[in-house]
Length: 632
Image (cartoon, rainbow, N blue to C red; front, side, top):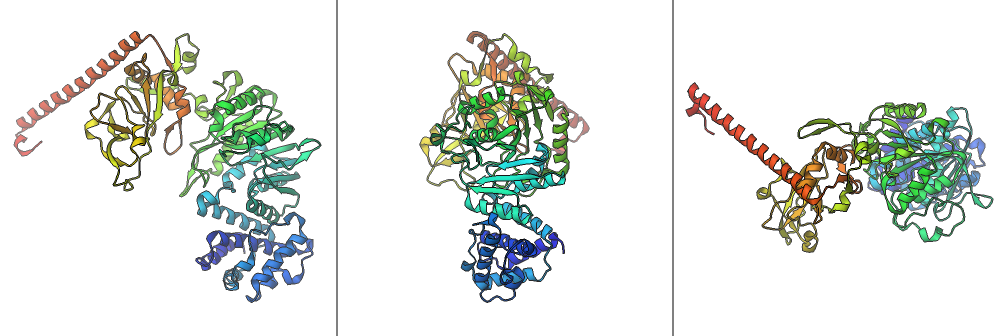
């Protein structure tokens, strides 16, 4: 019997006991049961007494919980790598009747062999990830990610390390990849969550892996693996660390002597760069790492920006691979793979290989996934150094823009559709030109609109406010008279999002970017979260800003900073840094007024043409003799 059939039996068993155990406890029961089944099949490696073999324990339901509990202790004694690995499940807290229902269901089928039990264990982990969403995916990397990363690193003989190993799926896949290449590796892992640490060791064990050292502890504050007076160095590192941890312990490490933060110490508000720094410091002289990172790592400023700048200068980043959004069950954000290489090949020195693989995936019910052909394409292009327009491209370090690694920035939107036609844009020429320029952040106060209450959830005690939504901007004009009202309870909060005459509104969601200027208002109007607003400073003209952002160059800037696969969203930080040419205020007014009048004349010409067409049609209908049969 294959693993596919047996996994169906496991789901059937969990269904039988549904309502009698929490779903998480049911998954735990499945994982431990699989481990006990496996330990019987390798009894020749152990000292387990026959009484505590799975096949003997399940003969009767009486006292089964106590026997299973004792069996876990026996397995731990026989296999020291599993010491404390069963502590997340106490069989004695589960009634014998419930246990026996579950086990009886499994007993109807023959057990798969020991090699297939590892596949069953992995399937249970992935099922848990999908069914439990945010909580289930916290320590479990999606299958397409675990498959891709070892292929990118091309893991051969040596040491492999994961400092946030969770359920050890990345380590397991790394081991299997190396094995298929007739290579031997030793696995090292550390994990702060005790239950994930326990399950991770069971996962490695059930998949036939013995050559591992997996420790419990806080990787950032207490790195377990050390050599001499410093931290241990590894040949390969793969990590899917938890994103954006706040208050991670900066103060505790600012005086440490391991040399992990030679490129800078991250702020305490975000641990992402702390994990990246730890990985770099843990690499051997020829080591290579693949790290799953949120896109913020690629462009955030402050302390993170300084660290990124120093890492780039050290020529450690070999590739930045943008992946689709919604790959993970615990977050829908798009992520990237950051490949760090301590020993780049000669032809890749002084360059970073950028990939935009965000649009190639299979859409699933709960999340997206990389298909085999997507994984194969990324792997092949990366290893072969293949460049393909809009997909993969080498960029020299001196051509990086402000040490920002945002992926769309390096895949120029050469052809841009504007109101007056399609243009080819050369943004680099503009940036390097002598035209005086400033960032949008320099010329205006920038704010994002207010998150609106969901439909039906408005507070009846709130105050009515007109709200601007995406559909309220048509042909560059705000349809003020047709705005809908929403009740907002927090008046002070609403006041923070009141628009003012002269504000420039830019839609922040959707493939089409809408731009409008706020006219003179007779009442308070709230801006929704679907917009970013610019409030120009005194020496800046609103119509000039609008004219520039609607120009081919402005459209290029806006389109190049959009993120997301399903829904395009403008990245706020990058929006603030868009460059705009700044002539004198007098010239701005002349240019802005010319744009305004031209648009007005265009609109009037369209209205007149439509009216002329209507009159001409009605005349022909009259000549046909049908005008009395139709009503307008």
